[in-house]
Length: 109
Image (cartoon, rainbow, N blue to C red; front, top):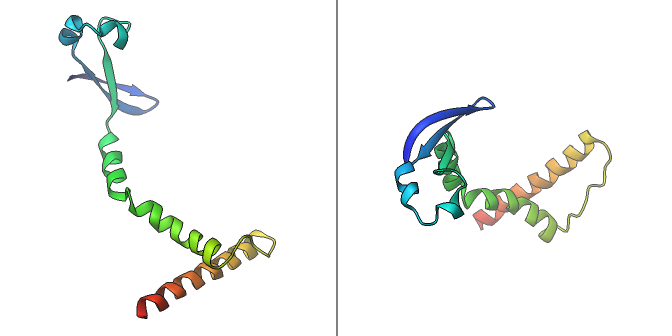
């Protein structure tokens, strides 16, 4: 498909891709579109998102889930014992400090 123009929707730029000549001869046109030809819109920043998804593909889930899995599974942490945002933050900070210390001890052994 060839880029035929651009469209702005809610402040974001989208490129429009069309190929009317091929659509006119296609036997599946009625299944694909109700118009004379099909147009596809692609966000101009989509490539940035694709690169980021590829870069963080496996790292993100592992990096975020490991401390919570360790706290819940190995340390049997099921809930906080304090009340109030400041006290809960303090308790969770201590919990993840312990997680990091256990990781450092395991790395030295």
